[in-house]
Structure formats: structure tokens, C-alpha cells
Image (cartoon, rainbow, N blue to C red; front, side):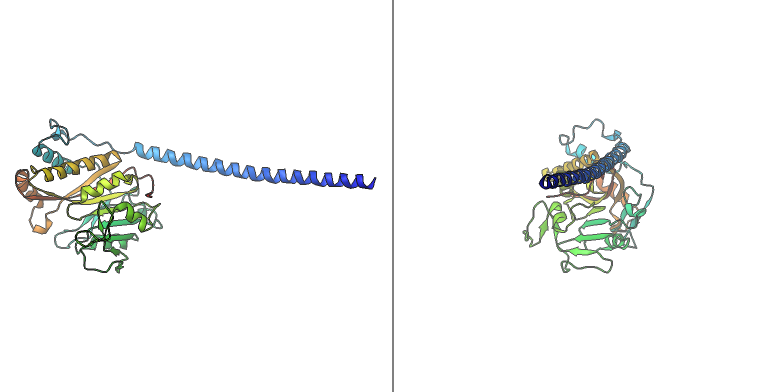
Length: 329
């Protein structure tokens, strides 16, 4: 009888062990299910927030002055130029809180506007937020970049033409890179400069998974190229601010200048489709020390189609659809 009793004890112990395992597994399973429910609710809540955010994007109003023009890309040089002119002077949003930063203290040349409304500038309400800025084109003037860095942001300034050491860190914290922005990656282009695409820079600098809170572009005539990179690499949703200096040279009637005029308009309106809204345009003639820089633009305007004059605009956008951090492969 002893062996039978031993067998019963073993069976009983095994049964109890099974019950314990089942209990532990069920507890673990319940915990996992609860975690899944919490994650699901969090995702649903985030999706709802994004949906509500997108619903609040102000519509782009039709520019009446452009009515009657042929389709963009098919119009005459005069109409294409007029269309772009009317676009840059038609604001799509009124920023209620912000300021000009940096620039020449005498005439303001080199200053840019920061719209510090919390939805576009999280540090306004969250001082622990790690903001990020990319600035292309220094031209000997770090003042705006320094101002942003002094507000606690990580700032990277790029310019292959500056006679400065690559990797230099300024007193403000700005990191300088002797690199230019381009459509292709090369360590030495025709000018001997190191060039990178925006996508590659995000990857090489370890900024995957972060927003670019301010993207500034002033590199003498590649502004449409940078906007196109943002569009082509699905980065429009991770940039909160965009400021650029547009360099438009005549005669617009020449094929190359006309193509640039059309590309600028096309890229900006495509960014509008991604939630970007123009909120500030400055006539960048301040360096001329003219009492009315805008008058200079108006003086040049009639001859832009058929002469070699130039118009410079600083245009600034905020992004109502900055819903995801940058992701590049």
C-alpha cells in the first residue's frame, strides 16, 4: 500500500503545482491584458488629440488677385511672378505671441521671427522640453542661432563657406558644422565642400525620433530644394517652424529663373497641404539702409520679368500638423 500512497502524494503535489502555475500565468496574463488596454486607450487618446489638432488648422484663403491666371506651371512668366508675389504677401495665420530675435542692431538685417505660442514652441510652457534647431547658412551672423540656443535649445548651424573649425561649439552652445545642404551626399563637391541631405544629417547627428522645432534656411538659392527634401522625405510633420530667405533673381522670362519661381510657389503651397501656414514675410532690403525697404521691392517689381534685378524675402511658417517626430532610414 505504501507505493500507492506515495503515488497519490506525487499526484497531489503535481496537481497543486499545476494550480499554482495556472494561477501565476493567469495573473501574468491579466497584467498583460491590462497593459494592452492601457496602451490602447493611450493610442486612442493620442489619435483623438491629433484629430482635434488637425481640425483646428486654419484654411488657406483664396488669393483674389490670382484669379484669372493660367494654372500654376502653365502661366506666362509675368503671371507666375505675380502669383508668387501675391502669395508671399498674403498671411495665412496671425501669430499672437512672438518676437524678432538676433540680427544687426542697427538695421535688423539677419533677424528672424519666433512664434512662441505653445503649440509651436513647447518650451514656452515646458522648460524641460528639449528643443532642436537646424540653421543652414551662417554668413558670418550667428545672432539668431545664439538667441535660440540661449533659450535652452540644441542648435546646429551649417555652412561650408565659413572659415571655422568643424565641430566648434560657441559660448551660447551652438554647434557649428562645416557642411552644406544639398540634394546629394558627398564629402567633397566641386567647390571642395562637404555636403549632406537633410535626411542624412538627421541620421548622422542622432536626431531620429525628435522634432525639429526650428528649421532656418539662408543659403543663397537652395530654399526650394530644402522644401522639396522636406516633402519628399515625409518630414513636413516633424518640423514646427520654418524660416527661409527667398532669393529670386530676374529675368523671370529666362527658363531657369522661371523654373525656380514656379518651384518656390509649388513647394510652399504643397507645404500648406501639410498644415504649414505662412505668418510672416519681411522684405530683406534692410542692408540698403533705405527708410522704406518695401518701396525698394516695389521699385524692382515691374522689371523682374525682363531684367536681372533681384528680390529678397524672408518668409516664416508655423506647422499646425506637427504630429510625429522625424523618422529617417
